[in-house]
Amino acid sequence: MESTDWDRRYESKDLLWSEGPNRWVEEVAAELPPGRALDLAAGEGRNALWLVERGWTATAVDFSPVALRRARTLAGDRIGGRGDRLELVEADLRAYVPEPGGYDLVISAYLQVGAELRRQVMRAAAAALAGGGLLLVVAHDSDNLAHGVGGPQDPAVLYTARDVAADLDGCGLEVVRAETRGREVETDDGRRTALDAFLLARRPR
Image 1 (cartoon, rainbow, N blue to C red):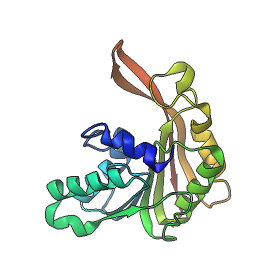
Image 2 (image 1 turned 90 degrees about the horizontal axis):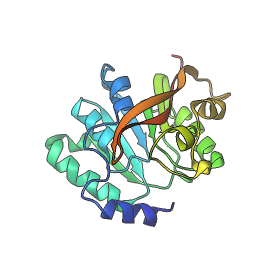
Image 3 (image 1 turned 90 degrees about the vertical axis):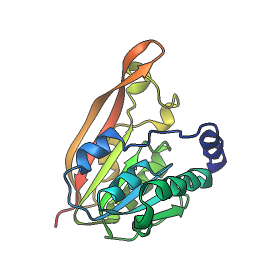
Image 4 (image 1 turned 120 degrees about the horizontal axis):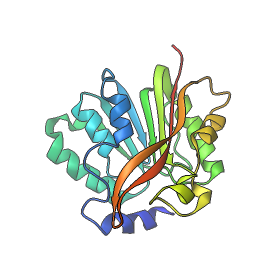
């Protein structure tokens, strides 16, 4: 999907995603000391805004101007005078190069791209980590297509934690965890389980 496709999706609802952070982001970052964070394909900025509320400085990158306008509005309502701690960057990840070694936490949550671009983005994300920094990748798992619910139905944009670990080979990161996780969701057919790819990696100090 191109940025205009996502613009239409964001325009179709007042809030496409939840106001709160992704559950896996919250699990990983809740106890971390504040630092600098980078959120790639940030959408409406839910993860970045939550981090700023917790004392972080965050950069949220997305190629949808509609999503970023919404993030800016939400920031005005939620963080007020701390707006200088949030940077919103309109950029396509096909061309975006983050600051090398500049971040204590890099997040990629539900990036839906093919394998070649995914590898490029993951390796750029790894290069953006400072010593001791964490990379968190969350995605719709490839197995979700057959055994889960929701998410993209195109297998070309689905992947596993093992795929991400392979993308990061040679980047100097230690993989802390790479696994498939179940996420309970409400559907018209009742409560179902979606399958997410979850990878957490660290750059040694």
